[in-house]
Image 1 (tube, helix red, strand yellow):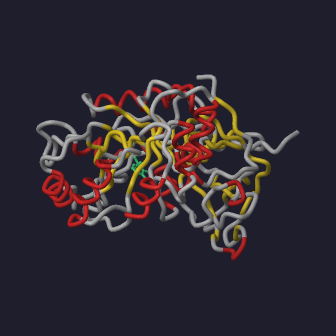
Image 2 (spheres, rainbow, N blue to C red):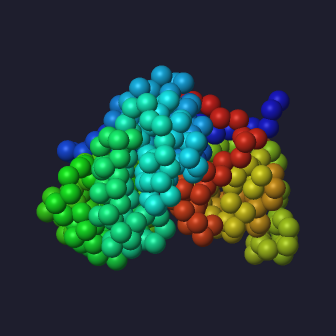
Length: 370
Ligand SMILES: *Cc1c(COP(=O)(O)O)cnc(C)c1O
């Protein structure tokens, strides 16, 4: 028998979450962000469920190529643009839209022997200080691009650092509006957090206009602003389940310890279950005792350190559990039980994004039939 661990990808949840993007960004067109192999879900596995998007946004040329091979003829955006001049050949051949965030990328375009002019998204650094032109350089970059025969339409974009938190988007939005005032072209500003928190008319700090939104994490069912809001608050459903089974049970007496470093000590008699899941499966090693986990759909918590292939669970809430019992590390459990990946991430000092992306290659993945 194979090791009982498995990941499930929920196509229905992906489609429903994409519909939530549209509900929040009614007049916008939606890019489903599928970088990092669709946030660890697998590009080929999410493709059918996300075909109702207006476009796909990714990072690697290889991902763009896989989308074309899957038959996608609509827009594809390269979120960081080209990494070297010959990437422009791929953009021509695969008809990719690409971000232009630095002067070198304009130089490459100017030397590119274009077949057809390319659509570009000129990126402003409005304060995140990662990629993009400084406000003082944006208009000359725009003028340069606009004059190139290699370039078709020039659109404008920026990325918010604090769309998920109390600092908000006010200063970056004001910087963007000031620098781009009067320039023609579509705008793309919103990631998931901005879609959820800043696009609604009438909401405080709301009314953000983004002709194209770039929705990543919410499509996969994780709340970008957890723990202020959880996925249920935003009506998002988990797109990934990580599940396994108990492969052993231990009966502890008071004073017994569990696992490497003996970091957990039983204070009374207690049963613990050993789960076939460890950090080599992508489960976070930094998730300490007390991290939530479902056994037979009931909420329990981990005890002791996570090892490479196993972790331990306190079985006191599920006296009937034994070897073979179903364990949900995150996602959908039996019945209607759900454990949000955000809760597990928080217990490990990280975010849902990282856990999804870190699902290990050794975990078999199936499409759920719900
Ligand atoms: C990854 C990424 C997104 C998506 O962000 P989410 O928080 O996952 O919605 C949007 N824009 C850019 C530029 C990105 O790199």
